[in-house]
Length: 630
Image (cartoon, rainbow, N blue to C red; front, side, top):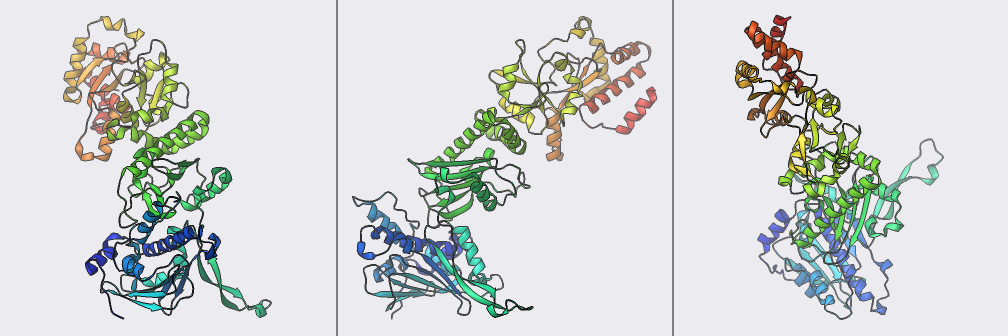
């Protein structure tokens, strides 16, 4: 029996397969099982027209057997098998694929069926077994052949082929598992619990039974009634995989309780999903998706450790746990599964070629999720508000990100707490209630609704009965600034100098020339403020601060929290309520006690800082100043 060399660049290419293409050694079992499934697919197709075969779909299976003493793991199938030429062409030539060739041949036939589904289209997966095996032996007999063949290889040095004996058609792959090293524990691939777990993870939805003799223990019959019962080991053949994915079954045949249980087990969730979305698409791209909208925010959701993305399957075989390309960032909370045969896989099922098929699926999923959320908002407000409490911030981030690219799709899904309704409302609901004379959509920012209610800047709006949207999250103001307007109504902060309404109490005061007073306060405060102006919004309070330019005080707080060294600072504008007694007292003191008037100006400015939630530059100096005036 002569040793034969691989027909490719042998050692270099095989080393590449083992060390570069696959990131996890455990992938080998998925690849071997997928190849076995391919072989059964081929024989199943032939069985449709060959009555002499005497096999039905129920007769096919894939069997695993681990032998710890011999350090072998055997994967056996009763599929189409291989002859000598197949072994040389498929296993002797790295990156040659019999599956791909078979699919091409079948699709060219006039009576070809549309559901020919061959998982492996590249002849690389088999060689992943060398990541865990020091030797591989393949014993196989092809459908229609009287001769069985054995293929053996210890790696890149080459392989041997010889005739052998085998009862029945099919293939038996025997992996001699490597010895343990300091860095790698290869014994795990001989443990039944580990093999069972790998099948469940990667090959649970292979359409044929994957069986294995499982070692179990039971009480010996003759010691059942003893105070010290004895136990004995026995073996029982179990089917390790589910075979039919829940997403492949008609939706009408799956009760919601089963979807809930699947979600909880698959994604390790404690609660039930808020929404289950089942969709099947046929056309240019064919796929099925089972999506879930969670009911609560994962503990690590807003951290770098959180992994977004959907589980991606190709014909029931797991390709990746987190395919990020399938969901946009603003819907990163969606969990679920996409299964399609229309993927352009390259030489490893772990890596995808990011082609138009994947892009089309992602676009369809984004539209589907958006429609479902819109329907939930319109038809089940209570559930939607629960969803928004968990993930509303994510939608707001989606508005702000990518320079507002997604704002049109997301704006109608946003909720903000209303000053008049005392509950979350949509922008559409707000605009629908706007007063005829109202120019803007008003909003106010603060840490809580109670804190916003206490702001002097909101007094005029509340006295006029204008509704305000409360922005209590750090992203809220950025969101509204990105939107700029909604249904031709611009957003206006309650902190703005011009609210587009008149303050009746100050109309008489505005007739006076107050230039001297404003100039005095500005000279007293110097660079602490950019301007000092008479307020058009204050009613009962003497003073407030507004921000000039594009940065608000809430933005200043946010930027200083995330980038303290940046020194981001809003330009301060001090607004004075000229009808307030404290301001009028300060004005009179300018003529009688100018030093005391300056102290009044400093105190009023410090009070404005405190009201705005901004830190005092020198708290001790402020308290001394107040004490000096008492």
